[in-house]
Image 1 (tube, rainbow, N blue to C red):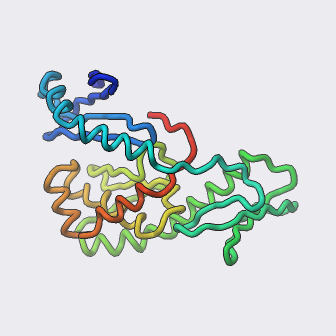
Image 2 (image 1 turned 45 degrees about the vertical axis):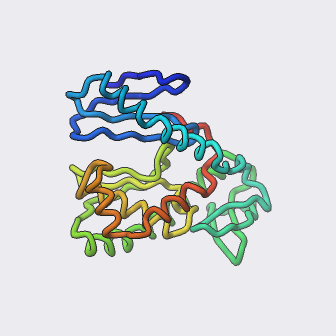
Length: 238
């Protein structure tokens, strides 16, 4: 069940769920506000809670609005692309062979068939990023399974428009945003640990924070680092 409350010029989406605690989120890129609340909680109580957090909400929205945006990609020579936080200059080679992506020194070589359009180039590069992530994730999960005492049954990699990752604690599975392959590897590790911590605690309550502090004492540094990096230039929808 989804409803909305208005706080001046801020609209808050309210989702009533089978949970124990209230959870407040402010999502990129525009600062959309969402509250997940227990089914039994009435709307007036939720409104009072939202008003009490108004200062924090506005602070988060300001941060998101100030966050740098990537320029739209046109997949042309000398355009900047990032892999694991390192900048590469694109070189497009048109040749009648199977498409490929290769990195050499500070260049990214994108091989495409003659006449390949921008949309297809993007699809080739997106698939390549997905493969880089699929290769990088298993050893990180294995490391943290041993440290955290949890088991990830499956992980999925896909384009995600509103978050870096998500967890289905009932299915013991996690989802990761393909764009993490563009960010430094410690940012990827932070997101994986964050989602794995949800296997122990599904919500973002005090116990979840304590678990993050226990397993990754510098997790807030990694989170802030990730949040400072440029995000994709697209009209994110919810």
